[in-house]
Image (cartoon, rainbow, N blue to C red; front, side):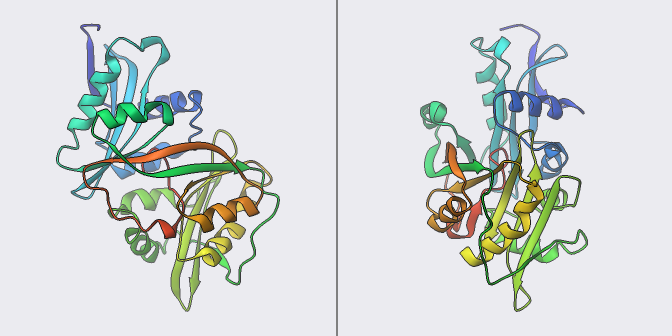
Length: 282
């Protein structure tokens, strides 16, 4: 290992570099994810660098006082097999001491994560394709106004393990290539979702809803934003209604990850998770 190597917090512009690495690895991040990612936890993003040159990365984003989520664990291909990845991992994990840590692991890495104390919780299946139709629903979803996020934030906090107000305020804000919708019944929120432009096509996430009818209304509002491009949704395999909605639109399984936790797994109501927010931040 080079004696000039050190792990430090990311500097301005480096998260964009790491997201480009993620694109090259096939993770297909959103075109403007960095803004919301940094809002989630500005102190949660790290690079391993030799002098001024980043060679690897990790994010350990902290939510509340008891939960963190690990992602963007990448070592540039030119620097693999030299011990940098282990050093970056250990430095990142240390920043979340005392918290439950979650991650979404690909099959090839799951045994390594288990050796590091992470236990499997549930399978997530990425569905993708060009939607051949929209699901029918008795409800109608509407675009979210940036000035009316308060109810949406409360709804999200009942599903996600910890409140994440700053992240959602940035994630759900209307920008080009990004759209958030909410569905209500009797003036009460029954679900919400966001679609965003990615390097390839669009991803929908989160897609949180009380039931399949509410999720269908959200999909009917969000999917047209893709204008015929490929759409991806990361769905917990336990949510059979969510899988059926994706298959009903003509989407197919393209990728799998395992949600894993080190520490006590949070109680997430997966029947309400029709689409995971993002595999990088939970």
